[in-house]
Length: 393
Image (cartoon, rainbow, N blue to C red; front, side, top):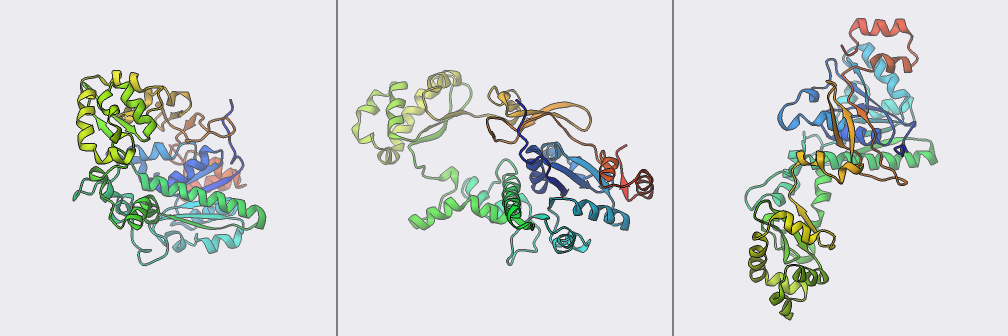
């Protein structure tokens, strides 16, 4: 089946780095948009990050075209303005005011392109913190997510760039909303998404818990669960998670594991009663599960409707049989090596957006992008010779 491309024909210009901004472009590209990423001379520094940052660039920049511009030069700025003039969407995530100082802010660009959707991915929406520099980790710490993730007294960031990525997703939601409105008005608008407010939205359930109960939410490792069995259990070899979240599942769970004595206790038939009896129930269940291998437990639970999950590792997902049915797409890295990476997690009209993707070299499409602007060969050659534009070597 041909992958769905609902955003085919949409022209996107991206001035981004790291994760949050590139996530916006990656989602738009994955849905069929033509995304041109403007990189500085020599390419975005994100390409060269080590350690935990080594995967940022290939994950969030697949399927985009690349042009390298010197935005400190008049010629480079002129090219940037021409790119924006013909774009439907601009995405940027630099510090507040960075593009404004270059003359590429929303007001200036909307004057020449009234239909432009200008998406700024920032640390904060307007307010006292607006000019602060923020990172995913800063937002997690400020917004209560790190507090909720770690054990009491030991705030811990989540194990992925969840705020960067979710903030990018909110940016996409804003862009699609603005495009819908543009269909009626003919005019674009500025869209701003942020790290801090995204974090507040994610921990809003814990704020609501306080509003409802009057008691602060405890960090997740110390929480009182809403269910008696909602834990990681050790087996003979590898651990797994099991959740028993309804009274009907409790009956099924007792039958599966031969918990006749627990099922016979009618005081445990209702969820809230089981929560209050956790200290009595859990040791029995932990003992039974500890005497089995993980494969044996999975064999009992699979197909029963019981929530369970082996504790997976990211590197194991390359071989996950479920993801192999459409959740991974072939990717050619910029050094020519082949891999697979997660595609946009959607199904549209019965199809998945995944398609073979290529990670562009820095400046790989500089000449083609300039030609698409109507520049002739002599002008392109002059821009490259002057250093205002760089192409891949």
